[in-house]
Length: 439
Image (cartoon, rainbow, N blue to C red; front, side):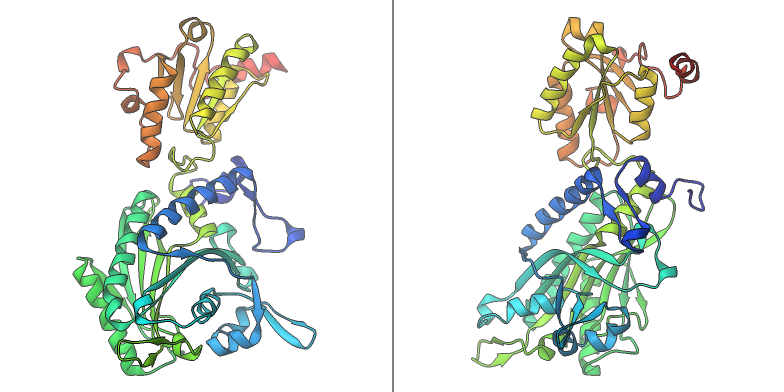
């Protein structure tokens, strides 16, 4: 399956790389993630956790369903009922959560709060459920089980501008770190189903515009596309195929705190409802993974690749040396595997390239004799006679700096004079002949 540009879709890439699958018997729009797909999810989550901690968020966990009374109180029941999964347990109606905000509000309300406590910031990598229409489901890009990198900030009026600015700049940094650098900003205004005081809508929208302006960002107004509880800033990114994606969202809510009876004590000893900022830095993890796979055409950068290195012995004779190299790579913290099967060397190299593995380490007689390795990247660039410690040091630098493209010649210290393709054929080279010999 290919997309309109002729490139492979994320569904095909996901199958080839054994990342995830969909199953008719499980239901539409419900992906299951395989080991390598789960590794990729966790890499993204771990990075976002670091960002959340720097911003001051504390991570929480909340259940997947709540009594419908909570959704009625928050306003989601009336606005989202047709997209919620609702069912009875005894005499009570429950709903799988389509949002996390009411659950985070429960944590805020669990004890008295003072202005000295604010801002209070909760994050959660939570799966929510929305009854999307069958015809709208599109692989990972639109699913019914949505894992959000969600976050909510409960704060006072005088804290809004600085918190919004910090989150907005963090969102831009996050998207650029993932290699999405062609960004634009929309500010979405009051929709037709809006709740709350129109004057507060004006104030909130003006605040978002001021934050974007002071951050030096160009923005466009998206009339009527705000959330029902408040206006929002959306960050859009253009991928390598020229498609625009709405990813980060930051929503300013002056309604939900009051609807849910949330209160804090201000400097004058009076009780007030907090304002709430809803934010997601990448949005749905499923959708984001689909976007990244197509953006990179399946060739994820080293720091994102579920398998970073594959060790390939030239023949069974060098399996023990290959195993030693493999173990050293794993000890150094890299995600690696060892291809010790009986396929021809060109076929095994070809399989590694098709799997999107950034680096292949090939070892044979010369490498075992000199206690070195030959390294090849998935673009076909080769360098021989490299000390493993030197290679690992440079790979660690590439991994930690989150470079978005493999840099073989660069990471090997410009060791281009040792470049060699001996024993390491291009993908497909002599493949047909040798495959026929194996049959």
